[in-house]
Image (cartoon, rainbow, N blue to C red; front, side, top):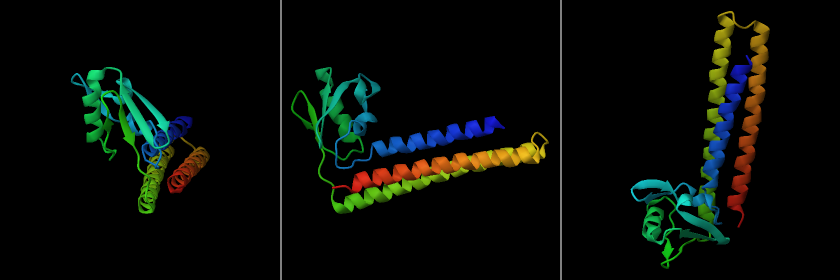
Length: 184
């Protein structure tokens, strides 16, 4: 009985964690090292995360500097940034690559807010699907005689409380990210 609740909560936690990871890469008009964290660089034939081949810093609110530890990697890092979905053209001065983020327009902010809400709704659907699957297991266990009716009801109540808790956390994350994006 506790296993079903625990496994379900772990899955819900992963769903929330994935949502927060997705939100970390959404540009809010401010530079954030997480924006380049998913970019893979061709490091002598091996796809390697950007932070393992370069120093990434944010000297200003709208600027990310990428300085490869091995100067011969400069072109590979620049190429990886251009291929990524960042939509920013890197400035290469021969030692450092600079990524300058433009101010977001009002229309772009609204589009990002819609995208944030959609990702939040998808996460809520995933949490509800986890609850549904767990409820199915509980009902099957009750039918097979492993649970009494009271145990089944109590477990379903605990599962609903866990679901409500994660839905609330998702709503809070959506609200916080939307506010961040809409702030000029």
